[in-house]
Image (cartoon, rainbow, N blue to C red; front, side, top):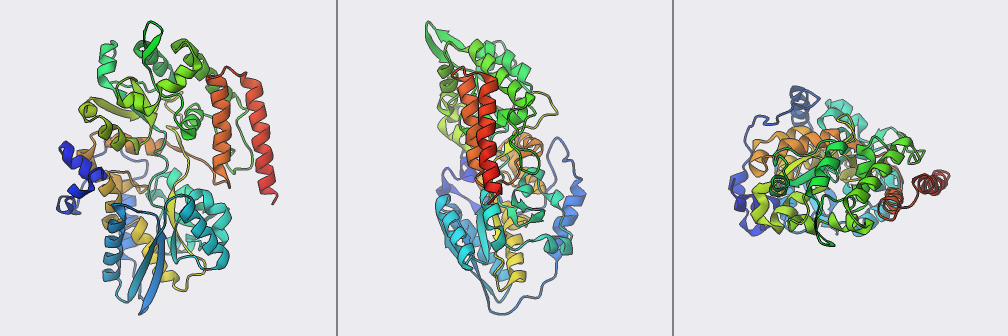
Length: 457
């Protein structure tokens, strides 16, 4: 696939889109590594879903609220028109809200007043608060033999609360901090193998010391982004074997040996590479990598279009690998939240709403196609084996592997505050030289007090 076709798929130049080039066809898996769950099992589950019988009531109207604006709104409307054609007598009325606070507020108000749309787009960080207003889907899944194994583990977990499943993920959230982008030219000019990225922290250290360049007192070429956004710092904690919470989300777990080792490694590395901690922070900016002033950048699949659009000339000179980890058994990163679709507990048409939920999330010709058109991975494993993804990106198998290795945060109300709490501790130690032990103890105490207060309400 040429450069123009790639941009069409990821929506950079939506006006160039050619739907005929993306017609759904039977396909075989192209991934280099087989998923941990047999593809045959996944396919069996999906076939069972599509074959599930349902007698639709006549003249049913379902309300849907979502935030897929811009070029994606017509794609949603196409999906809904096809749903209506497949389900005579059912009409879907869609409401578009802005992603972020706007749709979150509308869904919160809908739950509080009993007016939530039959099917609603919600964020995972809302699930604890709004779960009383959502319909648990466990019985539907059991009835139709839908296994949780069709999704990546960290993705389906985002719709869970207190032992029940309330929502299905729309797009991946586990791909935010688990990929390494590297500049092959810089590697080769630094005496490194341009086709071999660092996989371990120890290799990241070795590579970084070879690529950093100063011109006198001026830093002209950096190594990678120690920081970038709160999710990046959290990714380092997990690639080091640490965790923000215990498994059930009742304890903050950052004053641990794994967390101390993470901060020790990155603070020592920053001091060995740069003359000032602030340079370590600045050198990893995405703009530095896009301008070929940094050898590596660690983020997620959403950065692919940004990087290639920013500098088309380096498209073929960029490699994509899994973010470096302490050991090869460590997670590739951590899922920090995603958007999902859920059914209102007050819907008058639960069976029809369930059919719409499946249509929007686990049907390949609709939900899978929607993500393919964006050049983004799906939370459903099998959809990412579509061979057209390999045409979009020859490293697509890496994205799937990274998703499989991504850890999951427990669903905790106000999760952002805890992520930022770790970010502040990370930056204080790595960039400002704060003592590790007391910084972690103080952060642990503050965050645990916040969590205890939230759980006592």
